[in-house]
Length: 345
Ligand code: ADP
Ligand code: MG
Image (cartoon, rainbow, N blue to C red; front, side, top):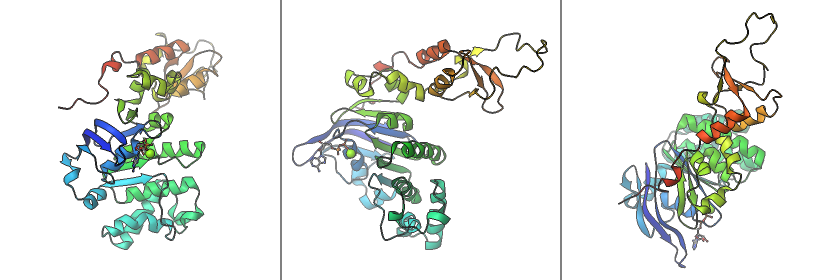
């Protein structure tokens, strides 16, 4: 969908912001670009909608060289969300959200109707917030409007530069979760810039870890955390990368201690015995290992019941040993040997 081929950007003052970048983002994929300030993330992003032109190399969108595409036409297909949101202060929330579709010729009534749907989608009731002005919203609410506005034109591609940067950590985590749920239904192709590793790991299908103007590793979050490709990536993800990995590794059936062959001691004289050892603290299969560990630590028995999320049926148990095994399983052998970016001719 988006393909960088040997892209280099040198600014007029001689600064090389990015050097020989090659990578590909698949349709419907969310790739996070993460790295310290000044490593070239925003430059990468702005080259996709031609706010900045590459010095060398080329960028393809759906197989077509964007250098040969009219920038205005290009930007119709690419939504852009930035940290400073950039809402029009003199327009209401609903008008702000409807702006782009109206510019593109959608009839006013239809554009406003769609804007209302999108505001609801990002958790802002249009009957409550639609007529407010940006200054009457909190930072987090303004960022939601920014996301709704970017989605309003229904672009297949979204560029998001530190979209949740301006909100406090608690609101931020909620916004991230809502955004992930939204992405599961709209399946846009997304490049999202962040300097926050936790955010990159939580949101990305794959992460591009930037060094100075180059991508050091381009891989799924679990692979980056399990097997950093270079010493730089290892130090960037930190010594606690194992803990971070817990959050992005789901519990699967093979991790569980199986139920005993005989099954629970049914009718063994203890009629009042509940179906699980500790009803209410069972973990649905597919939850993260971090959630599993948190619950396990509260279990005196050291055995956490795991249930089928569909029907609540007991499937087996997790123990500290099985969590440890699950983490080993999630360390794919040979991950570090994968090339950081796809090799190009
Ligand atoms: P990031 O978004 O990762 O913080 P940027 O892409 O904004 O990084 O910047 C990458 C490098 O390019 C930095 O060294 C920055 O100072 C430099 N840079 C960015 N914009 C310009 C510009 N217009 N002129 C010269 N240098 C720039
Ligand atoms: Mg930046």
